[in-house]
Image 1 (spheres, rainbow, N blue to C red):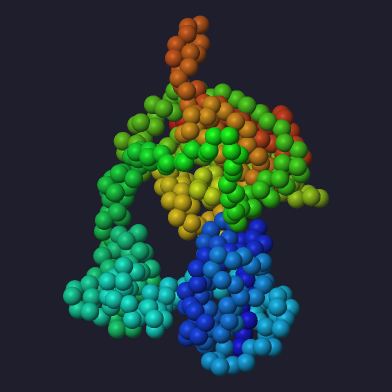
Image 2: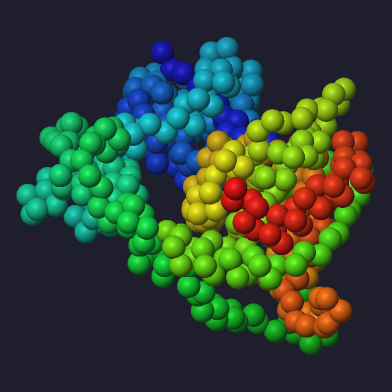
Length: 457
């Protein structure tokens, strides 16, 4: 019997999705776990897997089209099956009883298992199989011929996980078809790691990672044709799903939460000196933003009123510290979360933030990466911004805006000398945090940043 697939809700703020790509065409055979399509949400592009064997009988929208959550996305059934009855309803909302529930769709869409990733690598359509071997090599699909030439037969997901864990994939025994190495084989591998993992154990950062941290040359300015003199002109750019979500959330925050702002200058001389010493032994380069994340985490444990959320008829004071770190991407802003930040070392925070930033730029963040924040940090210091005010990232009660560290004249012991000063501004929800409460938090934060050793105890 044919079943309806509805547009799933892939994030807590998603109301509609864009079909970024279809991996199956009408008439193609589909196996359980095959990737049907890529869906662009307000925060990431995610893969939608099939939960049923059969044939793809209908596609509800073309590539690039938008569908609301629970609208008809596709129909899978037996080849030649009559689906006219399912199509009469139009919207997937009316077909929910015949299709799957929204919750089941979410679980299927988010649960990208290793099996599904492996089937994606080999489960190509007949048309794709007729393409030259060179095309298959580009898509990293391992063929029998490549295996005979000494290449390991493994799924792309397994190869990527092996590289991330520093595992020599040629030493892993494959349990898939024909000895193919799967994700489960990598997860269950008990041998020793090599490469980047060994570097981390030995306290040395992998050369590839060190090179990635070096400042990259600025991209050459793109040629922008000059507008005709005396003629009005403009371009209109479609609003992305991410930009829509950002606009909605910020408007709700700005006009719902009564904001007020507290600004403080921080002496960063000792932080500058200690950072240089720490980076001599740290397995990953520690940034000043990592200092701020760690200091905020420690200060929040001492000031739980700041680590709180407005819940309407009650205030939730969080005992755990999950710090959201704003990351700029091409389409807007993402806020991945460093969980239990108060219990992590500076090098752990640095590694996690760098990993999140890379995943954000590649649109590989998952819902679990950006949910659950209790406090948010937005840092524009790397752009030379001295100070600014930010809009609270709900449900947090506060957001800390961090400016650049500047060398300025300061007075010490009655003498004028050059010091490193950084300004921070905290946006507070006055329903939760009062001026005195926020000021006490900033005093603690200032003390930790001016004496960094205190937050390492």
